[in-house]
Image (cartoon, rainbow, N blue to C red; front, side, top):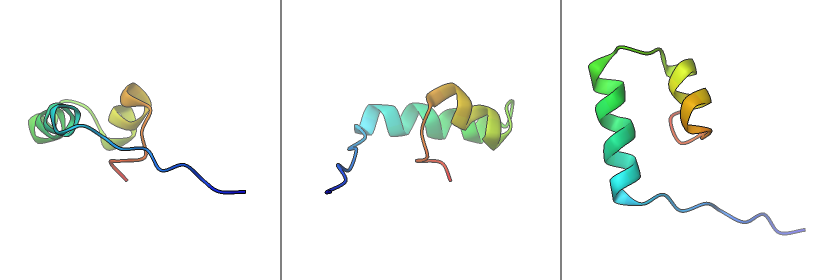
Length: 40
């Protein structure tokens, strides 16, 4: 069974990166918020 790879838009990447740079939330909180393994 083939796995479908999710593509993230540049806007999504920028939004998540800005949240990570602010360091208000931990990485675990960001992952749970955005429901993504993109940050790992």
